Image (cartoon, rainbow, N blue to C red; front, side, top):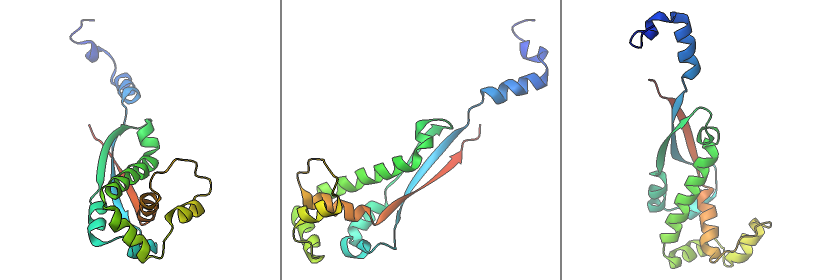
Length: 151
């Protein structure tokens, strides 16, 4: 058997078995932000500009069939949305955040945050930003879909 024609000398059914065994399915995972219309906080906390910045958030990754990214794609999408909303809230003016909270009858953000999260042990610098971020996050979810890459 020469090096040039070794695949021609192997039977086709054996070649098919080898190709199917070695072949790994790859997928493109797309995540898109959707608005949760059944949440009361959507109309109270989110204005049009904020909604536009959040709803434009999408991302895509390539992952194998047995990879961590493929198995935990929904959790990763939720985490990326939380990071995106935290960045937006961090860049907002503090006076605007306080005004939105006060318009919704929240005057002491620390008490409300501790009431909503009684088991939270993390060190928080600004309860107003953290509480506002939670309320905004409750108004959105990530829709993930998977597309198989054909070779």
